[in-house]
Image (cartoon, rainbow, N blue to C red; front, top):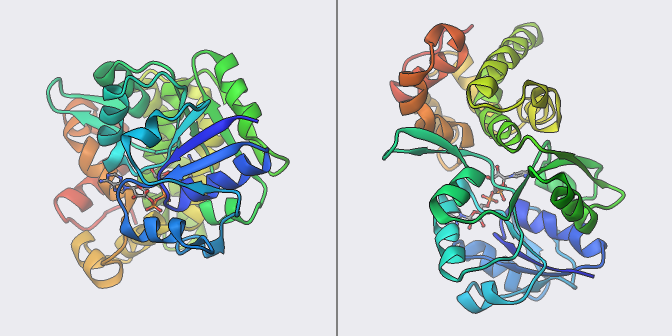
Length: 319
Ligand SMILES: NC(=O)c1ccc[n+]([C@@H]2O[C@H](COP(=O)([O-])OP(=O)(O)OC[C@H]3O[C@@H](n4cnc5c(N)ncnc54)[C@H](O)[C@@H]3O)[C@@H](O)[C@H]2O)c1
């Protein structure tokens, strides 16, 4: 039995508690930001309003505090949105926490100072001097995991033994873990699929979406090589695996479908998705300063078209 602290009581952090508990671990969840999730997790029945299920009774909720983070544990899991990453990295660094960390968050960060893009694990290492960080990515709808539907994910760490030791703690018969040494490739794939699923969603028929799917893979390959990840990671769970699930459903592809119908981004957001977070939009805004300056536009025409749709509110041309 291991002790796991999960930071982030949103859909993913809460769903992740289920295999962890089933594997007989002691699991504590804490929520630093959202009043709604704090209310859900601290309620008697532990009904989670995003997952629409009751979380297991064995799950412990603790108020977010330095003391909670300092509790002795075997694994700290970060399941916050990208916007919470700097905050939590600072907290963990200040407390000099040495426990192995597993990051579920998907995304990339643009560093204005040196005009570079960092993956989340690079950021932990370079900006916060934290090296014991693994990442877990892949096709996983939190609601499905919460129902114990079979789910396969990949854990990446340059030291594969560390990745496997985490897999042993968290995997179950329905939560299957694969392993990779290509941390950068896994992180870049799992982030940019949010943009490419929007592009695939813009296809107005299965034929056109399939064409966009194939072209997206070519662009993803180019980008992975640019960021020094391994090309083969594209065919893994963090690449085509996650691209499939995101293109088949979800908020990115929904936004893409409106763009494909000829709406501008602003108009579609205001009219159809005013309260939804579209992760692909956030990522597009984050990485655009780098992509537009550093990458040959001819190599990634779909990505450029989408960046123009989001940043300049232009209609997309891909259909
Ligand atoms: N690794 C995987 O298998 C996997 C699967 C699905 C989703 N995810 C990723 O997990 C992350 C969370 O997704 P989710 O579906 O749980 O989202 P959610 O909206 O349900 O929850 C978001 C979480 O982030 C916190 N948060 C939001 N803004 C914050 C801020 N400014 N500061 C601090 N905390 C903040 C919220 O309080 C909440 O805990 C996303 O990056 C998503 O891509 C990972």
